[in-house]
Image (cartoon, rainbow, N blue to C red; front, side, top):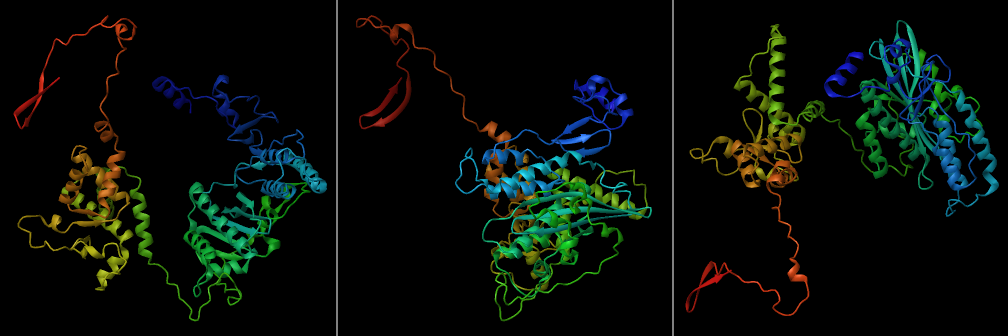
Length: 572
């Protein structure tokens, strides 16, 4: 850090300061003027550093909470101000904050003014909840989620629990690590929100809790770099588990959309049943107004029984009374759901990496170098010696990128053509008479195959690419730059000549040219000269002919047009 600080100062004239650490040796290595604001003795008990709204105790390396002490009036504005004064982005004190939101909704009747005194029937509950805020000053959450690093642990698993009631929906996640025979279970983060007032049954709310659990999983997977396959989910609703495991019946829109969202992130084998007594998320779906020690709630300490569990066998949960469930469509014949081909998922994972490239040439060269490295690794050659890329390797990289793009967007059409079946009528490329070439690339069929003497094969049968796709955008930008930022027709002609047929290409090219900075500069409106002030003689009142102008430069003939009497000249 010292070397970085000096380099930034000498080369960029940037001062790296406001440095804060819980290590005394780190702080002593820097000048006092570079320390964080309001930072005194690191060994002091009251050394609290604020970072993005969170309070960090440097001595104990824990997160703490600062509770506002000012009294607010018992009005809608006062209650809302008190509830919103608790900043908790990770969800440590969600059981308390959600209880305040529940009381706020119960205490404020519909139509009440912001500063109008509220009814007294709920003031005792509100006072009791306010008194429970005092326990927040005793909270000390360790900054480290585990006794060891996640990357160094023997096994790292994330267990996510969800629950719902008529008042609130909640989900909490816990990290279970095993290292050197020691197992620890620590709180990662939690989310809670109010349940809708009307129109939702308990199974619907429990399903919303399961959706909230998968949203937590997506965040944790990105931040901790833990694959989604290493996560387990728990709920105390067998109805929801039946929805997720269902393979025979269809749902109405509300349940269908949420089950689809859950299965995009998780699989049915990852979901397990847990009783309400063992569910730590259950403590966040009730209105708790008399909390004395939040550190003893299951929400914070987590389910300690996770330390003793072994590998759990996947369980299939049947639908609960499907004939009486209003969320399940009635049917006389069961419908079997077939799992999607795994190769499609693999293709999606590959094409997502293409989004990191903003230039077609760099993408192709990157794929070519990666392919060369893989060949060297298999042949056990010197992997540090990278040879220049040949034309054949660039051609292979082109084919690889195009095949992956087509496999992601036209997998149904490709499978139909391989099986010798006709394309579906609703296919977006059915009118192009597509076929697969020797490289298994989709190309346009058409009726000009006999023009081989005048046109190249790639112009006769161009490669089909999807619209609104990142690869299509990169190709349009590439050929647009190749024609020196000329218009749509030139760019489209260059694409067709190179052998590419992009669906909806005209509109995509126009959109990209519209957003092109160089084109906007070249095609901007001409600058206009600002007119000078009118001479004083023209605006000063006076007798007629006091100021007279004489045209001594004309007339100049600027145009000639034919009339009945001959040619006529217009002068200026």
